[in-house]
Amino acid sequence: MSRDLAAFAKENGVRYFLISYTDLFGAQRAKLVPAQAIADMQKDGAGFAGFATWLDLTPAHPDLFAVPDPDSVIQLPWQKEVAWVAADLVMEDKPVGQAPRVVLKKLVNAAAEHGLHVKTGVECEFFLTTPCGTQISDSADTATKSCYDQQALMRRYHVIAEICDAMLGMGWGPYQNDHEDANGQWEMNWNFDDSLITADRHAFFKFMTRSIAEKHGLRATFMPKPFLGLTGTGCHAHISVWDKTGKTNMFYDANDEMGLSQQGYHFLGGIMRHAESLSAITNPTVNSYKRINAPRTVSGATWAPNTVTWTGNNRTHMVRVPGKGRFELRLPDGAANPYLLQAVIIAAGLSGIMQKSDPGKRHDIDMYQLGHTVTDAPKLPLNLLDALRNFEKDDQLKSMLGEDFSKSFIKMKMQEWNSYASHLTQWERENTLDV
Image (cartoon, rainbow, N blue to C red):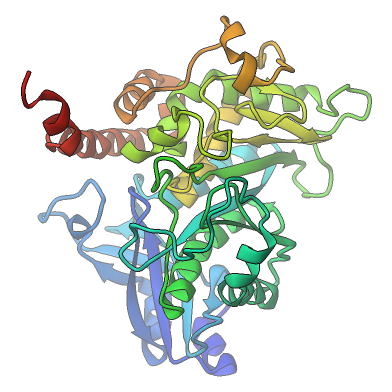
């Protein structure tokens, strides 16, 4: 039975609720609702003007209502009198088909109809920068090989430990935190769970990390490539599929060399088949493609894929199988919408299962050194425009995600691309002023 939010407020000393939804571009929108009014909001939702956020709506559309999902409620660890609750968007008593959380719930239900229960974990990376975002926050963090730097980690202990303590208190099961490959970059890990739970936690993690960084006078950014010479920010997803009880891993086969079942290979086959188009969602910004198609960084590797290949326990490919019964998709970046990331994984995987897709040849080479020898695998898109065009042509993936969503996403992302393309850059001045 769902929680009663008014009772939750009384039991936990909550004075206000943030009723929050995530729009198409991944921005979190909220209204601050006093606990005395939450009972009505739980029933009817908080009202918004949808056009005022990144949704494909006009000023003439009716009121948009964000109906809170009480099972998602989280009391802010850094401000206990406030609680955050994820919401589903409704207009004229109908779910809004383009809303990311609505899209994900539709795919969760579609998987359930096949007797499947998708579980995922995400590896969230981010940079801690100065408030303006143009420099990393720690001027002493200068090592060429800065990954796992112990001294740098302890210089930011106060921020990282506060975030980890919050996750411990919320029961997420955080298990490791580290300084990542780039100077000023961090990664924090918590236990995998049902895809909707992971998406809600991913959304809250981004909000929490930004908030705690601000509290300490810093800025946290999940931008994929904020510093050109440094390794970009990924958001690797670990994927497994279970039976309807959630207790039997349907991807696991002890007799297979990779530990994957036939169903696991088909799911992987769907990911491989749709990779060039799903990248529009896993890598949704102009900046995303500066990570995927980056030259070698100062540390010696980008740690990002640029070709549609898979392998065993080898981090130089788009997909690796690091252990039996699961695989890791290394394509997504920090800009990925938490809900759309999970939705597109399920959509592509279900497509693969339904069509019994073959993931293709396994490559066990170092793609950073020998990638040029692979001539039979597609390259990932060079830019957001190519990715959007691939997605627009992928009728099956669009159908799985829903036509309402797909049409709106393509329309608004094309507008974003056109805005970027019309921008005059300093590079153009430096290189073509005298042509």
